Length: 560
Image 1 (spheres, rainbow, N blue to C red):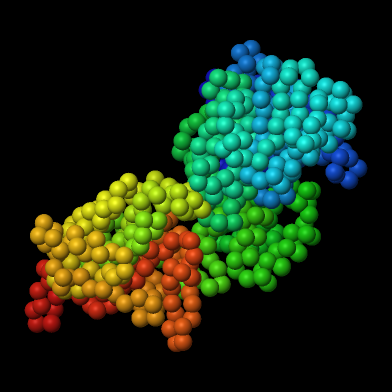
Image 2: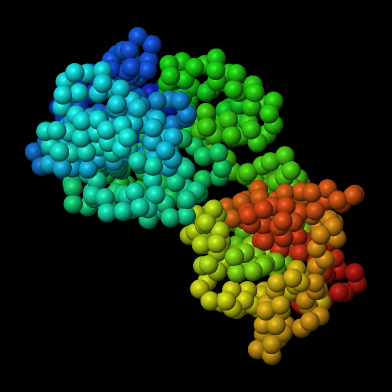
């Protein structure tokens, strides 16, 4: 059977309020059987207590039919076994989890099968369990067939011995599970957990021997830049939806604004809120959302961004707070994705280097800043290193560090000294290009990087102490900070648009100190800014208008 789960015209469909599932159920009879049963559940917490079939909108019905209609009734094999749903808050996601998983329990044919709703917290687990309990208590036939254990949040089918459990996730909860059907609720919260990927792998491992099974990842957008397993699944789902990856066993349904609407900031107008809220005017109360919209706008930029993320699925790029560095407002607009270390060296007439780092649980940041030949613009490339021990000591940022490693912006090392050697190799590469000044070409924060300096001045490396200068920190860095933000705002400093640097820029917190401003690691807390501090070190040197080793001064002109 040939088919595709892609929806390449999703941008037109979502604006026109059409279904985002372009593929009809693969096995229509099974889909109808499932919908007939699920449609008979009674919604106890809705005014009038209607049946599901009388109150469910087409988008939700299509999603349910796609799930159950993908199982071949002759072989018992499910042709689509992985589903991804991203939808704004208050669109009935947790209730849908209850509908789908109770339906899967009733249609399951395997004796003693395990079904699992996996939630990041107890509160979220309750949101899914309560609708299931209410569906059963409102139906005498279901009460006769199913045993409800509220304390354990467990439903047992007396006919098959199958169990449906709603659990708050941790590694102990899911260890050894052989679940046939798994619903992962609020995936974005798992993206913040260091070991979430292994946990989900453990929870869904039962599908390897249960071809009838499925896993559903459901989520709203995160109120922080996507990270970890959430980012990985969202990126993959978008590729399948757009047809860039062909995976007929994976079905994505993503309610988000088309790129053109994001660029035009159409999400700021409430008349467009329906785009990511298919239950707009039903479970999503228009008056309440209008009220929250007004309150969030008055609450400041950070609160408004969180409102946009939760209620309109707008992805947050930079974590901008009221005490943010001024350059953060212009950072994304100064991106030039063609910038790599290679292209920077090709385009530049001179290049300086900034280094900043700390202990084993910190990042070691390197910034290479070039001055473009034709335009005089400053071109920035950054990289960072971290020891693997940082993943344990800084568990709250471990998913992001692993993301940056995959994206090529960060290198994880096992042994102290491996990062020093790698930094020295890159510095020598810049030096060998002829672009590094003979004097004051490498700016360092003197604290914590003595090993780097010691390696650079060895006979084998051949870097001189004249080329290395300690950059004063604290309020003395004020000039470099101000210069950087002006250059970024005027697009006179361009960077590669890399996620790691966007994260570091978003982490930077400003403190007023007399007439100066400070950006310190202490003010930024557990979030890392070492690569950004390396940038300020490099800017301090580029502001001195350096000349490369190859530059020749002739009658006031510089030529290479």
